[in-house]
Image 1 (cartoon, rainbow, N blue to C red):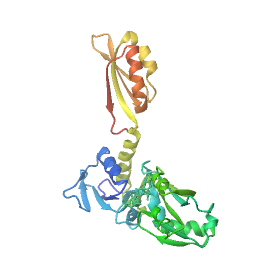
Image 2 (image 1 turned 120 degrees about the horizontal axis):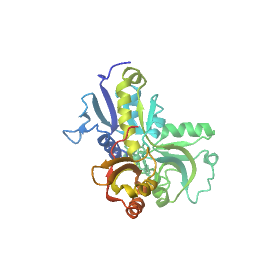
Image 3 (image 1 turned 45 degrees about the vertical axis):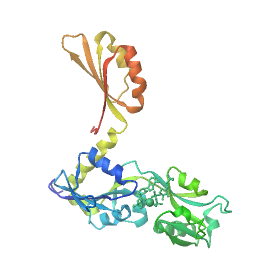
Image 4 (image 1 turned 90 degrees about the horizontal axis):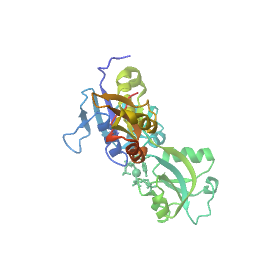
Length: 290
Ligand SMILES: Nc1ncnc2c1ncn2[C@@H]1O[C@H](COP(=O)(O)OP(=O)(O)OP(=O)(O)O)[C@@H](O)[C@H]1O
Ligand SMILES: O=P(O)(O)OC[C@H]1O[C@H](OP(=O)(O)OP(=O)(O)O)[C@H](O)[C@@H]1O
Ligand SMILES: [Mg+2]
């Protein structure tokens, strides 16, 4: 195992749907990117051992497989499309989408078997070839690089294989799902050799990302309460290691601190006030390491 002095190159998307959430993850995890120009392809970070490479999400799996980057962040669909030999390290749980086979609402097609001899438009030729081969169905693939849902209306395809998340694009283009091929989220992937040689540093980065995911949806609640009412307040505060209780010197009151889920806060504050809590503060948690 190598020391923590290993340099790491991290490949992340330069554009597209997941670029912004990944940038947010980098900031929250404390690995701030230092950009000197907006179209910069390689950037330094606050950690002199971590350098960032900005590339297209579809190219990240192969850059990582070939060792151009040690680790990368991209959709699991991109890894499947390229068939890249990388280690899947961490599911970041955003960028959720399903890759589906869809046909015009009025099409007679009911299953993949009905597509024999027909034309399929897709941005995912790799996944499609394997999918139709597994199904034993011979089709013609029409490769497009966006706006795939328009292909049936334009008369260039009989069906499409494309991503859907909210379902809006399928609905607007009057398309019906016939099958789900894969579901995808944004993941951290790693090069096999880098994992052996730079294990400690990669683990350090993963821990930083995990701590951001753990903190998501949680907030830090602080309040003061007279000791006589402490039991009522304690009963209201949900788990997560139980509240921390500290004496406020000479006041007959205590300070109570606890980590609580965001979704509980609105109701909880009212209940706590009724139970005698005062000076309530709710703070965002950026990172949480257990
Ligand atoms: N509708 C969506 N909802 C959630 N995630 C999506 C959606 N569309 C794409 N993604 C995910 O975003 C990642 C990058 O795809 P995206 O289409 O944003 O990149 P791109 O093709 O480089 O950008 P663009 O389509 O703007 O040219 C993929 O892993 C994909 O699964
Ligand atoms: O279910 P929805 O929420 O409507 O999302 C689905 C759309 O999102 C993606 O398009 P993207 O924004 O990447 O544009 P593109 O078609 O040019 O790739 C995908 O290719 C679909 O077209
Ligand atoms: Mg796209």
